[in-house]
Length: 437
Image (cartoon, rainbow, N blue to C red; front, side, top):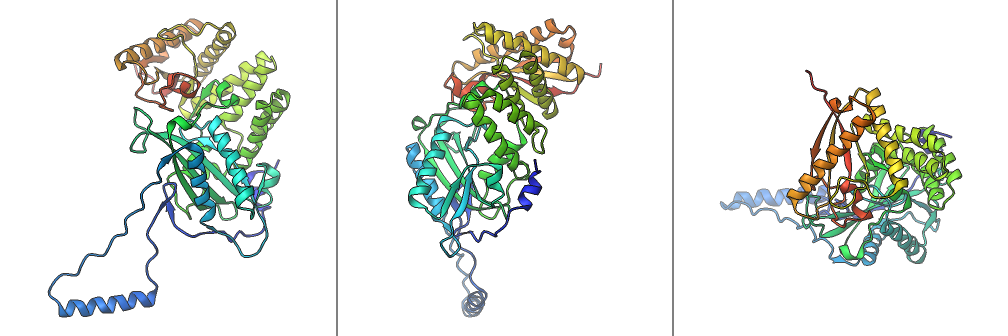
């Protein structure tokens, strides 16, 4: 398998795709460019003459106000609004040649997961391209397609507070952020923004992300989000994403196999990606674990979870999705799940022991319920996990400290207490400095 650099070297045919406006922060238009040199010179002469004949100070230059954000609307309408702006504002090269375009699956901007709504958004955009924008030739997101120098379409759907941020508290609307990328230049060539009502968005993760046991801040996923959000036309692709686009196409094939129940195919694909350039990603290690587990290969699954822990140690942080009974420190009453939890705890204890890593074990809750109760519940759950680790590997307690974070550090922040905000009820392991005494 060629590395990403080799694949991109094969791409031919410059794309003369330009943006008709400058965009920032997912679609905010900026004022037009400065006047041409002759016009600027004339303006300067007029200003000098005025200053010589008048004692009054010059009037301040008029400031063009930024346009208001789009209205908050139903999700489908917000997607159509953002996509129409993105494709409509792109200036295409002359001629009738169709421009190949691929979509790297759209994701939740907070969790990095594909969801019911991100998949629906991708389908809607595909239908729009076929019906309204025939110059774009939509193709599957594969390594073969990448060699044809396509345009790359990415997008995020992000639950935000009233001010558009992620402070703890209610989520008031969803930001639909779209970006069109030229893989030849490595730059963003068009942007689109929409705002959607929370009741019209289904953030339930697809099967792979629901099943994944752990979450770690992942460089490639973070680079995808940063490329889409907070950028303007002409900005470069985030390097962490740019370097792993080829791997992302291979991961897409593997994830499609997993979601379709073809676990043998998925395992072969994930193992191959893990050995390739760009394969050092959480999605890959989660994929090897999940596919092995589905195939009943328990020893392989245990070793794969150990790789997840190693990846988390390298990132100094790993969140594990232990599911507790409501208001309790006991795990959910499911023998199969509890059996896996024993494997997870054993691997966490063993791998952190080999690394001689000291850890802060922090419990977290969703924002439902009184905060004092959340603080207490999150603490006792962290203490329970620490105790279980020490029971499995005596002496582990000397390298750990248990803390309760309540709902002050949400990832999704939805407060739904279901599969949509399971990461907010995580137990997190952070590598910390060991005591000196």
